[in-house]
Amino acid sequence: MVKRVAGATDEELEQLAALFRLLSDRTRLNLLMLLADGERNVTSLCDALKLPQPTVSHHLGLLRMSNIIGNRRDGKQVFYSLNGRVGVDGDGALDISTHAFSVRIAAPAHKLVGLASASSSTAAAHANA
Image (cartoon, rainbow, N blue to C red):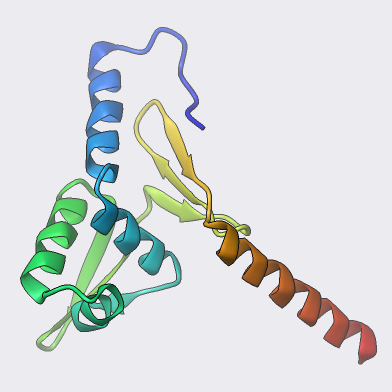
């Protein structure tokens, strides 16, 4: 879902096109979905994606340069997380904003099933207490 601001400028449309180019890569989408669950270091991202460190670092660099993710250093390790331009709603969907647009990436169906069963388990636990 993309919301368009009436009378968007060419610059605003180019920002949106650049965002879609960035998101058109499967590895970068996987990275965003992993980071939606919280901060991770490069090693854990490499393990989860089964990709070599240079490949993961390249994609993380592209996301970081576009202000989609942020990083912090702790000793020799670098930890990555979503930044203020990217939010995760209660359904696990990613909301990414540009100056004039907001792009929503819905969580995969299997994640939604996990969220629903976790919510009903929590509700059942509270009802039984």
